[in-house]
Amino acid sequence: MRSADYARLLLLAAIWGGAFVFLRVAAPVLGPVWTAEFRVLIGGLALLAWLRFTGIEVGLWRHRRFYLVVGAVIIALPFALYSFAAMHAPASLLSIVNSTSPIFGLLWSAAFRDERLTLRKAVGLILGVAGVALVAQPASAGGDPLLGWALAASLLACCAYGVTGVLIKRMQDGVSSRGMAAGNQLAAALVLLPLLPVLPPLAAPGPAVLANVLALAVLASAVAFVLYFRLIADIGATRALTVTYLIPLFGVLWGRLFLGETLPAAALGGGALILAGTLLVTRS
Image (cartoon, rainbow, N blue to C red; front, side, top):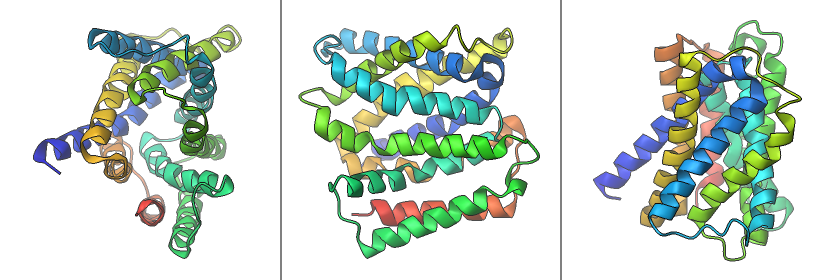
C-alpha cells in the first residue's frame, strides 16, 4: 500500500467514525426516519451529480429492482435503526457495535453457503458475541431506559449490513459499484418517503442540527463512498475492509472530544473482543 492509500484509509475511518457523532446530534431532534431520509437523499443526489460530472452511468431506471431491494435492506433499514439508536446510546458505543457487521456478514454467507464456517471464524464469532455481551451491560452507557433497545437496533442494523454480500452476489447483474453508491441511496430515500408524515421531526432543527445532517449526508455518505470505492480499486476489497478496525478508534475519540462521552472499562473491553473477533472472521 502507498502512503496515499493509508491516508485515504485513515480519512475514511475518521469520517465514518464521525458519522455516529453527527447522528447523536441530529437524531434526537429530527427523529430516526427524517434523519435517515435527509442523509440518503442529500448524499445520493450529491453522488449522482458527481457521477454524472465524471461521465459514469448509474442506470437508475434500468437497475431499479436492484436499487430498491438493496437500498431498502442495506441502507434505509440500517440508517433508520442507527438513527433511533443514536437517540439513546453514546456515539462511541455505537461505533464499537458497528464492528460486528463483518461477523454478521459471515453468518449470512454461511447460511447461503457462499462461505465455509471454519474453526478460526467460529472462534471469531464467539469472541464477537462475548464482546457484545460486555458492551450491552447497563453500566456501559449510563442510565437511558431505552439503551437496551438502542443496542438491539444497532445490532439489527449490523445484521442488515451483513447481508450486503449475499444480495449483491445474487442481484448485481452488471450494476457498477459506483452506481450502487448513488442508486441505492436514492432508492432508500424513496422507500423511507411514506414514513415521513407518520413519524415527523420531534422538534424544529437549529443550525447545529442542520450542519450535522449536512455533514452526515455529504461527508459520511457521498464523500465516504467515493473514498471507499477508490480504495477498493487501488488496494482491493479485503484490504479496504480494514477500515472496520479503525472506525471504533475514531468513534470513541470524536465522542470524547465533541460530546464529552466516556466509556467504562467493560465497554472498552467488549470493543476489544469485538475487534478481535472481526479480525479472525475477515482474515483471509
